[in-house]
Length: 311
Figure (spheres, rainbow, N blue to C red):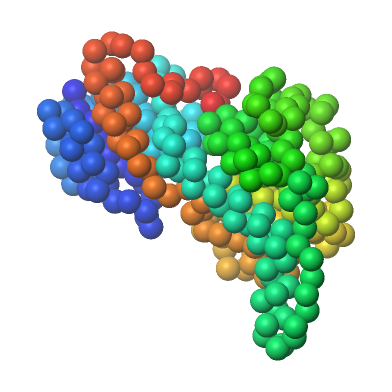
């Protein structure tokens, strides 16, 4: 039994770096990279960010795909993955904290009028403008799982009014929690900022269409660090032009890298970051190694995904 590390993406940690980190916590395990693959029939587990169909076809004894992160939609929907292969994800605190910080940074940027002050500085204009009042500012957090819950608590502790929304009922102290599709439009209409950290499922793909965008509070800010397919981007551009919402901050897009001719690059009410809201995995390699051990021992896995539900 062997574990193959193959991120499938560039611009992040390399396969060798991740394999080294796994070996440091589990030196006894057989950990390989594409450069040291050897006999593919010996691979029983893969750790990936993006799953390559051609690689799956090479591995007749593959039993588990470990996602090096949270979003698993491209894995569970991959037609090349046999039905018996299990899928797990990671739930480390470091990237959850970083994503919460990303939301906070762009909320505070608007909250403290930073774009205005930067523009006024370029004109040598002294223009005092009152910042927004924190206790009077409502922030919605859509998705109250590991990352969304971390985000809601961070915003709550700073003093914002936080309203959470999830598919099923959740409870977070100090956060007004709502659930179910019927509750979402009314909630959006109350929020000055909306933080989206939802998974990609058949129910959430294109969730923010023209109808739902029109339910947002005029001038509000929509921030998405969940999955890129959550938002109908053509509908978003039309909604931004109408001022509902007033601004969008997007770390995830329907196509990545975003093509240079995409109008989102140049829209004055859009801020883009290149999928960097959560970067460091912290001690998550311990869970990768632990899942390999558990798979080999026939024990229950950490953070296993329901492939039918998609999360």
